[in-house]
Image (cartoon, rainbow, N blue to C red; front, side, top):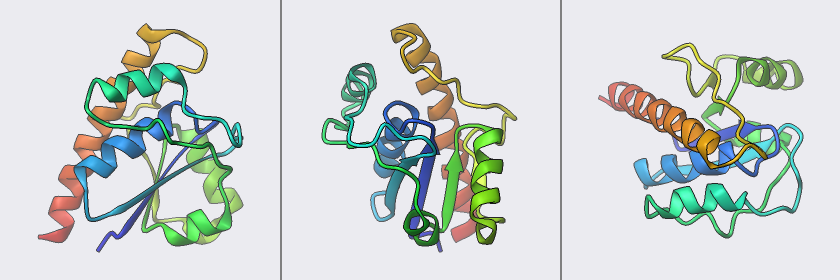
Length: 146
């Protein structure tokens, strides 16, 4: 049973807050957290990320960036990174997490594009990739629980 999902990116202001919002809506009974490998600690989600999520009736306006910690990794039943490099970094820093760390875009074999400071068009590509990843993991979790 998956009770807690952790989503990880670099700065924790674009991709992981959007993925956190989408996953939290998809799995209302599951705790969803996000963090960054090099988080812009204390910063809010990027305004474009907030806007794109608001268009989907998801409020990430109160998000505050946090660094990835031992607490996050230990608490999570599933850890989803945005890139293969991030996945490897998590597994290197937290070897006990191997087997529960995957890339959000694993099914498609893709890294989610980093839209930080790249404008709305790149954010839209990233959120589309995140939505596909969330759909895949939603299907996978339904299979695991049945």
